[in-house]
Length: 302
Length: 210
Image 1: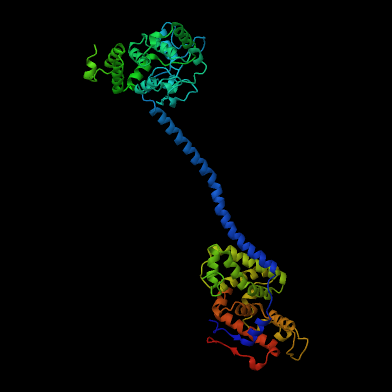
Image 2 (image 1 turned 30 degrees about the vertical axis):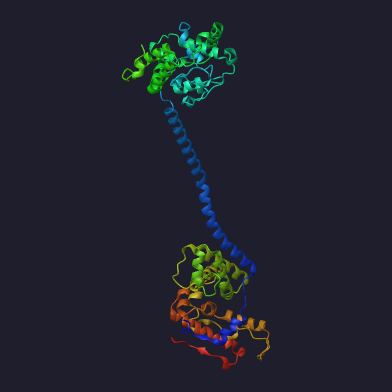
């Protein structure tokens, strides 16, 4: 390669032997550090890109996740309310008055029913299809989604009857620690309340539904002391709970009620010898499901 | 082939450094730092200036690494950067940059004879035990006494082990011009340092092109 250029071997050797000048070591260190710094700078630039966009990307992902979860929960909440009527409007609740009955005083049966609905988990089953607007504030609306519990003092029969009737109200019942002592833990008190609920209501369509839940627990309702019944009514009137409109709830109850389970319940009443209640239930069933065939074993009912 | 492999070419090392391998640059720097420094030192005649320019040249190499392409030998590229830096230095210091470009092609333009430029050795009679330092100083003085263009051609040939074409590429001149400069440079050095080596040991090769 270099053979074509003039050269002097002696001069070259002499030069290479004697030419020993080198840059100072400090200069070398600076140069090497500078070269590494450039490499590190490139790495820093890559890191800085991550730092620059990492936080916004994380924030955006968090927002998207939160919105998605919120929408899913909202949708699930709607799905868990089978008898939900979108057009249902909440019934205005009077803000004053010691007797916080949501309905007028002139309609005691409905008032007692709606007030007493929350008073005890041991109460007779009640459809869970109350409009969500009627759910009191601070109470999770999703709790109306059909969770069933056997409340304190609830007998197995009551619990099973509640399960058979598709009731979810027991789960909706707030901790009734303040009112349970008033009502008493006895079955008599609970059943007296059930008797009250079975009374006629101003909304005929809702009456059968209101009467239905009371029936399983009314095996000994007539034995309930009258005093306990009065006390119960007073407590129910004093209950500061908002109540859904009875007609709306009755409609929702009917919609939520499974005909098969209803018929099963009627059969059970017949087996237990409670023919009057079974008749009432069957009549209510026919009204609610006029197209549904009545089984032969129940046609025998007068 | 690792960056530490002596067989690794300068161009490969530079490409490795371009890819982010700082060790490749260290190896490359170790190969060329002394040669480049001596070239700059002889060309500017000032150690401090040479250090400054040495640093500048390597900074240029580091800064240009992203766009480095193997279009020529690394040594050609490196000495071209150094050559341009020297021209900047001379322009800044008031010297004519044309000194590098034109001087040295014609022996008549070289100024005073080489004998007058090379300092006289302290001892007229050659001494085998002459201290290396004294010889080195004489050599350095002889080289520094060369016209800039001839000195540059000589230094690139010796330090960079570059061919005529590569020197021509690095300095922006023609091949024949470089060849002429180199021949004059060698002649003057022989003339000034002839007493340092016996004539029998001197083998001047003109190469095929001569």
